[in-house]
Image 1 (tube, rainbow over the protein chains, first blue to last red):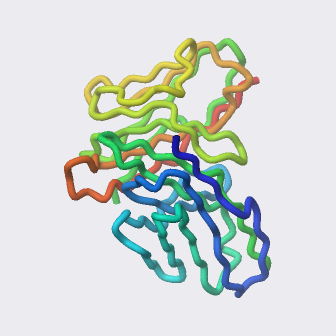
Image 2: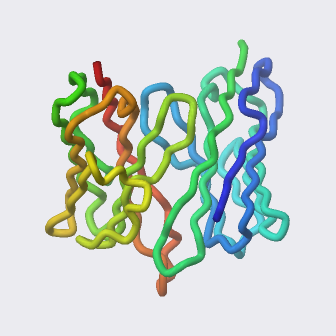
Length: 113
Length: 118
C-alpha cells in the first residue's frame, strides 16, 4: 500500500529565504508525482508535475526533483515571498491500469515579511 | 481556461439531513475523482470514475454515501443522512486517463464544497 509523508508539517521563514519541502513515498512504482498549492478554504492548484522518467521540473522560482528509487521528492522555493504562504501537498499516481492518486498530509508554509 | 466546476461552494446542514454535491469536470476528461479533506489533512479518495464506471470506491462509506456519473460527464456525490463527522471539504478533480496513452495524468481540481454539519 502506497503511503506518502511530508516533512516538515509546518514551516515559518523570513521573506527572501530559500527553502526546501520534502515528500516521501513507500512504493517506487509510480507514474508521476505532482506538487500542489492550497490556500485556506480553497481547492488545490497544480504547481509542477514530474513524470517517473524525469529527474526534475522547474517553473519560475519553483524547482521540484524526483528520486524514484529512494522514494523522495523535494520542492525548492527560491527567494520566498509572503504570497507563497499556503499549504503545499505532494501526490503520487500509481503505475497501474487505473489512476489512483495518493496525497501526503501537506506542509503549511508561512513567509514572514 | 478550462476548469473543474463544483457546487455549492458552502453547505450548512443539520445532522440526519440529506446533502448533495455536483461536479462538472474539464471537457474530455474521462477520469473523475471525489476526495474528502478534513482540516489539516491531505485529501482522501472517496470514489474514482472512469467514464461512467466506478473503478475505486473502497473508502466510500456506502451506508450513507453514494456517487454517480450517469452519462460519463458530470457527477453527483450524495450523503444521507449527514453526520457531524462528515464536516469537511469535498473536492472534485479530473484528468485524462494515462494507461496506454502519452497523457501526463495531470490532476485538476475544482474549488471544493465546504460542508458543515450541525
